[in-house]
Image 1 (cartoon, rainbow, N blue to C red):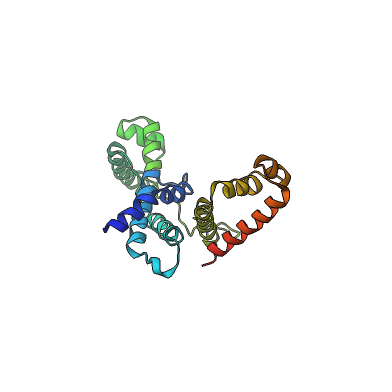
Image 2 (cartoon, rainbow, N blue to C red):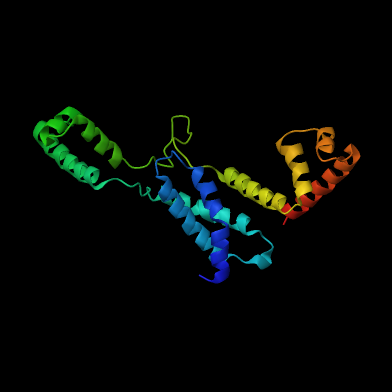
Length: 219
């Protein structure tokens, strides 16, 4: 990795956290999500070409999300402790033996008795061994049973990251105008009083700032 690529990764690691947080609770540990996202960030840094006029964040977010999606497609790499994995193997063998002998599936209680462990441990091991929900499983109505966000989510996240970058380049006074007007919902009169400006000045400045932001966002 070159010094420039290393800088891009270091300065944009927050993008990985922003993307990974969107997938919390979907069956894969956050550490795994973060690790996959980092792989995407490194790939983005390696393939980024600033001469094309695209912001690095705009280029990197799809790559980060792509690696996280790959994790889901591959079934995830959820960390399960060794004891649960070992118990899961024993349960599998016990189930096969029980089916051969009894001609039916065993209950949790029967497995617990056969293996000499608590029913709670059997249930935990079975749950830990289940695969992540399929991304293509469908309900009767054709809706996805469990899915990762669609392309519209990707685009909105990219736009949000780009917008924050542009706002960060504004001077302090202009940032405050945007913050109060669009993030706090304040009137121009309120902003004028807070910044010791006239309402006309705030109105004119706001129009210039918005125009500048739009020009920077359209690549």
